Length: 192
Image (spheres, rainbow, N blue to C red):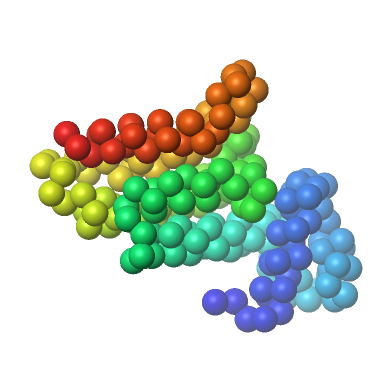
């Protein structure tokens, strides 16, 4: 866990990067936002790029903590956990802007290798959480589990996020009806 000053810098940078993008954010602005000198930022980060990657990693860690808390809720059945998981992703554009933008950059072949490394880390950890919930909740329903199944859920849930945005543009179907369809589809996959 970073010390307080470093975390303060990361949080200020996260707001700047999310609002203005990496290229239009300067270290002077980040420093000014939290009333420190730019030299203090350089004490903790060797460059703006380094600050950005650490900020992205911090946001990914925050997101993964949310995913973990969704799946570790003992009071909810697995289907509700999966729905809450999808809703968490649905909020990514608002609540996890750096992750969302990094995914868009990846889809547009504009992501940096270091960003791709962070996405790989996130997707792998997310798959581990999904694997736990699938094994614990659907042990009797799944006769032979492919090691690819958790990854399938993770990748498709990110795809659903972007698919739902397209659906809002192209269709009058309500998002709730789409979510119901998604859950029924996944339940059907698990029942086989």
